[in-house]
Length: 98
Image 1: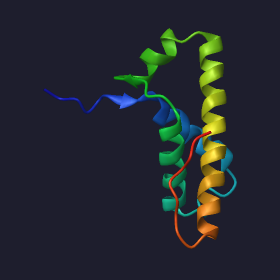
Image 2: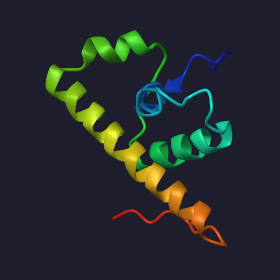
Image 3: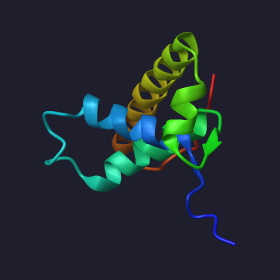
Image 4: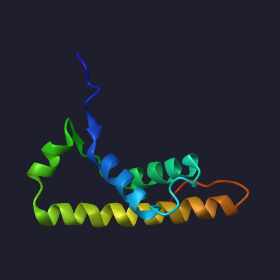
């Protein structure tokens, strides 16, 4: 039995938001930096596992989709702030949610 088509729908949304946030500098930004932001942002968001992204998009209402987009944008910005702060400190901390 194969399970490789199953993934967290928020992964797609977070990657899309990262690209939009860093669109002008995406090719010049360290890949580890972006991956750190993505991981922290994903850990702030709920899991929504799907086999195909189109399945999730089809069953979401407009308001649910808008709320997901808002949550993703907020999570990416908070994660970026956290990663940026960690780069300025000598020792990394774990992320503390509010």
